[in-house]
Every structure is written in C-alpha cells, then in structure tokens.
Amino acid sequence: MLRITLPLLVALLAAMTAVPAAAFDGIRVTLLGTGGPWPSVERFGPSTLVEAGDQVLLFDCGRGVAQRLAQAGVALKDVDAVFLTHLHSDRTVGLPDLWLTGWLRGRPDPLLVFGPDGTQDMMRHFEQAFRADIASHVDLPHEAAAIAAHDIGENVVYSTDDVTVTAFVVDHGSIAPAYGYRIDYQGRRAVVLSGDTRYSDNLIRVARGVQLLVHEVAAADPDLASTSERVRSIIGIHTTPEDAARVFRQTRPYLAIYAPILLFDVNEDALMRRTHALYPGAVQVGRDLMVIEIQNELQVRNGPSEERRLRD
Image (cartoon, rainbow, N blue to C red; front, side):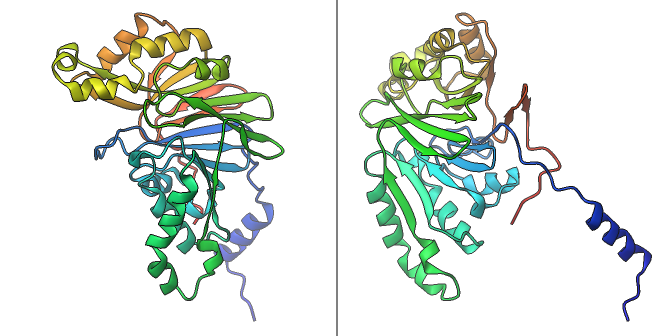
C-alpha cells in the first residue's frame, strides 16, 4: 500500500500544478567563443549560438565549443544545425567534439552542417577519421553518427515556419568563399554575424537596420604593424576598428558587438576609442558567454540566466 508522506504530497501537487515554460519568442544570441586561433582560457575559439524560437543553431565550431554549450545550458544533442563561415581550422576544430559527443549523448539524427565549398569533403574525412571509434559503440544507432553536410552558395540556406538563415559572401582574402549569416525570426527580428571579413559592401547591404550586428575586429599597435609583416598580413584580411565604424555608420544596428576579437599590443580601451572616434552609436566588446536577447526590447547579460539548466 502506498503511503502518502508530506514530501511526496508536495511533489505530487507541484507536478500537477506546474505550468510548462513558454517557448522563447525571439532571438537569443550567446557568444560561446570570441577569441582567435591561439589557446586562451578567457576567449575560446570562435563560435556563436543563436536560439530563434524553438531552433537551436550554431555558427562556427571553434576550440572549446562543447564546454561553452554546457556552460550555456544547451545539450549537444539539441543543436539543430551548424553553419560554417569558412574552413579555417579555428572555425572547425571543435566540430568533431560537438558531432560525436552529441551522438553519444543521444542525438537521434545525423548532424546537419552547412558551409562553403569543401564542407562536404571535410565532413567525409571526419567520418573516415573516426570510423573506428564509431564502430566500437555497438549499442548506439550508427545512422545517427553520420554528418548531413551541404556545400552552400549565397542564398537562403535554412528555413522553418519562423526562422530563415541567409548566407552572404564576405571578403576574407584568399580563403574563398567565406560567408556571413543573417538570421531572421518571424520577419520582425534579425541578427547578422559577419564571420571573418575585411570591410564588406555586401555585408552592409545585408545588415542595414538589423537589431544586432556581431562583427569581427582586428587591431594592432601602429609601431608593431610597421615592423611585422605577419601582423600586417593578418590585419589585412580582417576589419580594423576604423573600418568597423564605417560599417556601423552605414548599417545603423540597434547594437553592434565585437566578436571575435584579434588584438596585437592593443587593449580594449584603445579599441573602443578608435571605434567611437568615428561612430558614436552603441558598440560593446563581446565576451565569452555574453547573452543578447531580442524580444520586445534588446537586453544584454554577461552570462546565461541562472534558471537555465543543461537539458542532457
């Protein structure tokens, strides 16, 4: 015979009266990694999580993406699709972890990946590289361990009833094609991610009037740049704060966020001074796990809300 104790009664009443949490009605952007190719415990490799309505979308998979997703309260198996801006290693090195660990943790379908020409080849080689590991897990569905990869062009590349993801070409020097992405939710809210790029007229065309523009930036001390060919070559395929200010002046986002960030003997205060000398609008330096939510208003937090729990 079941005895109804007071703790059990309280638990039963809570379960009966609990109201399911409403789906997030807007766009939530979490900067998972805002750093460059070199290891840093403060700025992980480039990766941005965009939750639009019920869609969980990941843009680039830099170093440490799995750890940052866990910190953000998002299970690896819940990522609906991955979008690569380009195939530099700092944008892809975390992808095997996301793919395989997500499968181990219960992802029921192949991982959906979109990217520039060469993405399908890269994903086939990932599958080949880890075939022994996959084969060893005899208790898991091997069809879910596949990667459904798509080489894309400049166009709408992903859409649901509420969400549209559009790829557009940017200029990242010799690595071509390279893409930025625009994410629209219900035709009322929009975010643009620049990817790695120099000053880009095409990006300006796509990003005019969006609520949030997440734009890369690279800056160097002038003396260092004058003496280091390597630094000059890196700066030459990225956007300086002066050029970023030109972009912001022409697009007029409600908020611009710098991410990812490459700084050579320049601190963040100098970066912002150089920006605000040419653009007085709202600009912030992105940080890992910074959250920007766009619903009826735009809100910025330094980390995920406390009520979020890992759904794994």
